[in-house]
Length: 335
Ligand SMILES: [Zn+2]
Image (cartoon, rainbow, N blue to C red; front, side, top):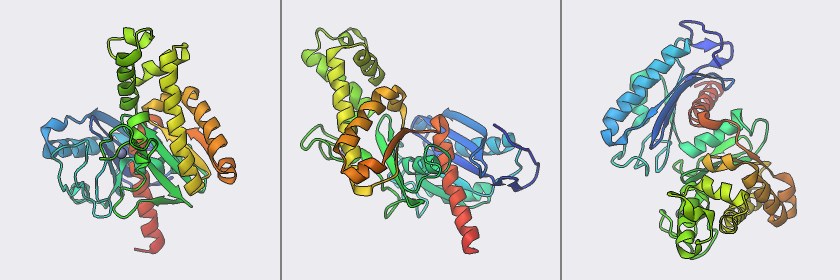
């Protein structure tokens, strides 16, 4: 995917290059991204979060330096950083990310600016992914879109009239915590009945394990040593009644949350990403049908529902897209 290598230059034929850093709970991903969305020198390593923030951040920055060298593009004009919340995006501080215990009030953009000697920008990872999909993925060319990542948990972000919606401190777009079943399963956020505790990958697996214990004697799921979300999808496709029931409930509750979001925001496009969406049409078909059936007529007609376009590099590309956007705004404002 490498473009023209012009050693020692800041600006390539496709505009400035920026470094994207994606800080996940299990993996760190870095890469250089040019203005056309092309990635260069992408590196992925385990986070090893038990080593603590100082060691992990040092390793992350060293990966960034290796990535810049591998890209052959010379240097970068900015650094974009994506990390799960809670964060203070405007201040550039990792307040207390849920997936990184002991990372309290870390001034990550100051640290990155000092190391790479360029401006640095921080964004919630799902919000950054939404913007990456908008600029370079399934959302290219649309006016307004919402993005949900249905993975271990459920996160999301919204781009409204071409602008990323951040909320007051950059934690907006928590679509996983839309209520789908009042008084239902207990959620990490402290409420009961959130979408995340039904439709995330780990919740699908947990519901399946509970159902098997209660009434799963005849189900093929009962014969597995460990049940994961993809097993539920496979068994449902093979006609297992218990798996079918679990999967139907999953798609119905996801569609219920999307119907609310479509009614409230009337986007042109809903983009679904994350590991659970590898189920493809088994997820997309029933969700599309239910949202078209249940959303208010004008909104339902306007909103397409599509799978994400950026796959595994969405974290790096999203972080970089945020930095590129900030650079363009600075140029535009003449700062
Ligand atoms: Zn919740």
